[in-house]
Image (cartoon, rainbow, N blue to C red; front, top):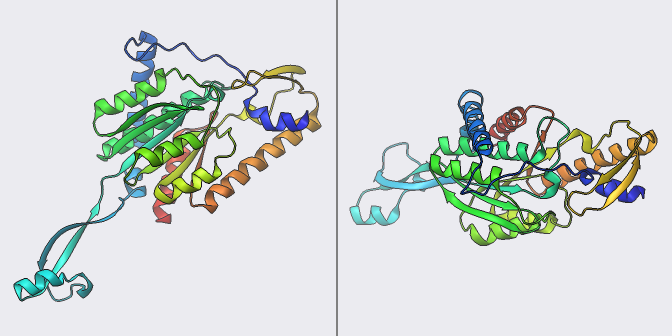
Amino acid sequence: MFQTLTKNFREWFSVPTPSAAKDNHLSPELLQRIKNIQVKTNYMVNDIMAGEYVSAFKGRGMEFSEVREYQPGDDVRLIDWNVTARMNQPFIKEFIEERELTLMLLVDVSSSGSFGSEQKMKNEIAAEVASTLAFAAIKNNDKIGLIIFSDKIEHHIPPKKGKGHIWNIIRTILSFQPEGKGTNLSLPLEYLLKIQKKKATTFLISDFQAENYESQLKLARQRFDIIAINIIDPREETLPNVGLVYLEDSETGKTLLVDTNDHEMIKKHKTLCLKKRQEQKTFFSSIGIDTIEIHTNKSLTDPIIKYFKYREKKH
């Protein structure tokens, strides 16, 4: 029983999600939520995260611009010998930084996100995180694409630019009604490898309540710059002392009776959860993937800004 508990404890809650209208028939409540997030994240990007995104993501490399006549002090390694031979005088290649990026958002919409012990559920936090990143990217004239997944690929929006495109992405994240309940992290990574031929900075936003995705993650990391954003709720690791409670796995529907008065069991569970999370971060780091942890009871932007500053120094 204890092994089952430690494996599934973080998923053993079932909180109904607010009813969402279809994309073409948005309810006034959902429309207002979208506008609120747009205003909030726009403020975050303009007044809190200004410059941090640009500094952290400086482009994919150098792009050829033109050739010009060689001048004393120029790097001889940049001499274009073909042009030099034709013109009978030395010319060099000039390069400019390729500033435009493609940002891919991989957002987990499985049923385990329909839980939140604080003011917001994990899937709402995930939507705000994705929106913040999308606004930061669009203000830097980058392309943004979206893959929504559960235990299947639910929806895909190809990378594009523009405010209307961002509105569509935010609306899709907030109003989407997934068909699947479970989580399969391998699927979006396989799909990304299939549909995205160019390099892309990829944010994988999930609570990472899945297994057997490590090999696919390694493959995707060979092609893409991947950052894992882990959405965490405090009650997934520590339960209040309320006696016997039935917990329901929101993805499988299974139930489990837990005695929250059993302090030793609760303590061991928390220790194992923290250990598992640290092992996951260590694995991600070992294959070149950074992790941002977003807690539902703490600031959403602070961890992102902290990571941007860390990435700027790192690169």
